[in-house]
Length: 99
Image (cartoon, rainbow, N blue to C red; front, side):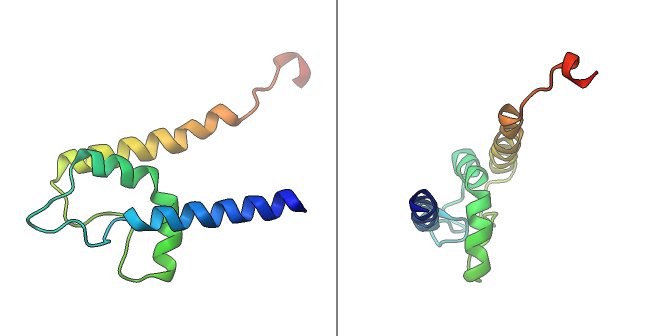
């Protein structure tokens, strides 16, 4: 039970920390566009941004003030690498055990 409480506290803490740098938080504008590194960061925190955007209508999971291709490349590279990395945690089945 203690582990579950600590895990829940840790998840809430991480969500609160990431909420300061979600897309649409006001740091970017038409004069200050988000670049490739912002795209990578926003791609990494996309799941947290999605959860946060459910409670705050001013934020989203994608920055609307971006510089185009570079931001998109960083965003999608981070999304693919993050969710593709989940395959590392799956156990591989042994061919002999399937028979």
